[in-house]
Image 1 (cartoon, rainbow, N blue to C red):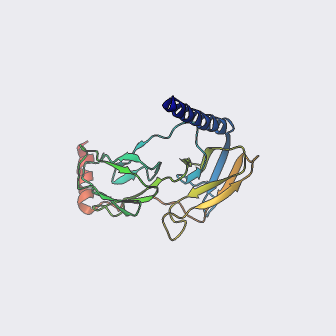
Image 2: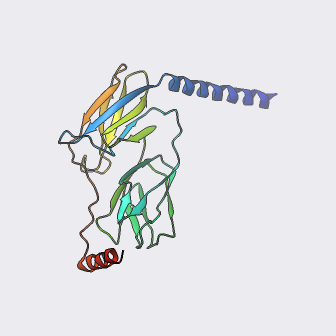
Image 3: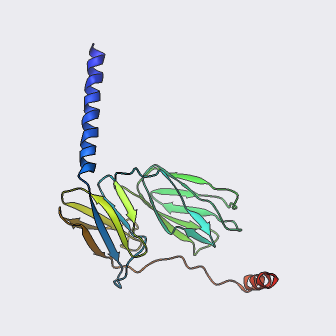
Length: 225
C-alpha cells in the first residue's frame, strides 16, 4: 500500500507539471523581432532567444557542411547535448577544429566520404575553424535558452513568447570582447513586434582568390567543357 501511495504522489506531481507546461504553451503569443546592423540594414543569421519553450521540440542533431572551402551554414544554433555532423562536400580534405571553452575538439584531415559527428554537452559559443584554410570560420551557438532562432535574410524572426512581460536575448559575432557577449531587450505583455539595432556589420567567410595554378587548372577545365 505504501508503494502505491508513493507512486500515486509521483503521478500527481508529474500531472501538475504537464498541466503547467500545457497552460504556459496555451498562453503563448507570437512576437516578431527585426534585427538591423550598424548601417540600419536587416541582419541575417542573428541568434534571437527567449526563455520560454516553443510548442515544437528542438531537434537534437544538425549539420554543418563544407562547400567550396566554406562552412555552411555560417551560424547554427542547437541545444546542449545536441550532435553536429560535419560532412565534407568538397573534393579536397579539411581539418575542422575549435579551441572554444564550450567545446574543444579537432577532426583529423578527412575527405568527402566521411561525416564525423561531435556532441556538444555544454551551452556556449563554439568558434569553428579549419587548420588548412584560414579563411574558413563558423559559429555554433549552443543555447542556454529555452528557444533560439536565426533571423532570415531580412533580419526578421518570429518567436513564441509568454503572455506576460519577458526578455529577448540577441547574439551575433563581434558584439563584445567575449565571444559569448549578447544584448538583452525587454518586451511588454502586449507587444507583438520588437526592433533591435546592433553595433555590428555583417560577417562572412571570404575565400582568397585562386592561385595562378588554380586559375590555369580552372581555365583548362572550362576549355575542355
